[in-house]
Image (cartoon, rainbow, N blue to C red; front, top):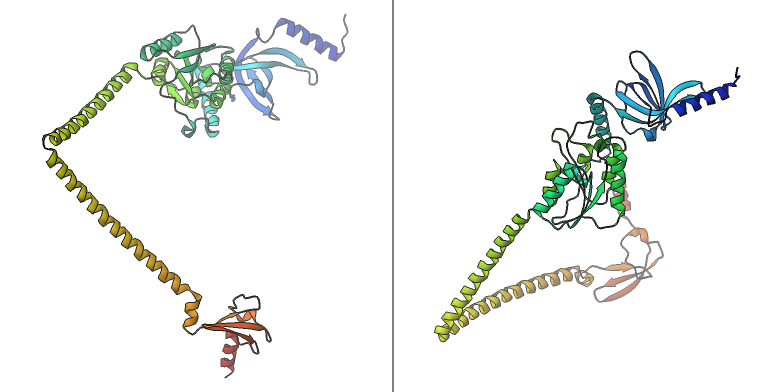
Length: 402
């Protein structure tokens, strides 16, 4: 018989469990119960069905989907016993939602969270250049969506340089693939005019990589204008809501990215014809004027002289009116300045007082008995000494006494 200490026994059991399964082999499906997050970093919940229950532990950084009690999920991780508590649980590395109901519930919760943060605001969205020359394309190079997108681009415009970032578009690791490609395109410094993400249609579960929170945040942080086109019409993914421009399908994505060269050529031909007609009309008018002038140069010169005299007279009249208006304005300003001249006020019999520093005295509060002051009159100055000060308040008091 082998005798273990408690710690050794638990370590032995954990060693046996780790050799039996790892996170790529063990998947347990059940319903979430008692979900909670501790200290903003530890996630704990129970996974149950009709006949059993097991505890789940993971870090908040590994939780890529919003969870609620009652959701059906698949948990991938490693079974173990925690020595401190002697409690058996699964140490989860990732959690995936199961069933359309759980997916939709999680999707709504995440959409509300990101909407509050402003990730879908129309005011921050950018326009694509009218004639792009180089794009980063994030797609599965083996998909029909990729083929359709490239074919439509070639038919509509051609000559566009496309750098393909091949990724998985569904299943385990696809969200990480998308985030890595977005970041790589933004750090390659290749002057991309647009960053395009496409994939074909599928079920809600198939499209969940495009609803992943980290993918959405990577699109939001992209320095390159983004265009996302998913091959479905019924539901709009969070990636599409975040993108600067949304294409309803990969084909529509190609149409939004580049104009149709036949339309551009047709528009150029129309503008060329318009310019040609305008030039022909002007040349015809000048030829007509020149022809009449050559047939009767004397009459033509006389008409030109009359027209010149008329315009000269009109200019002279306008100049006289302008001169008169400016002169009147000048005189008005002179009159205004004259009315504000202190000498003009003195000429009407007023006197201005100043102290020893030449500062104007405007209140009795600046005076004291015995103060030397100067009286400035119209034709000279006089030095004075203050013998008595009478204010308005003093006069009012004297009237009340009387």
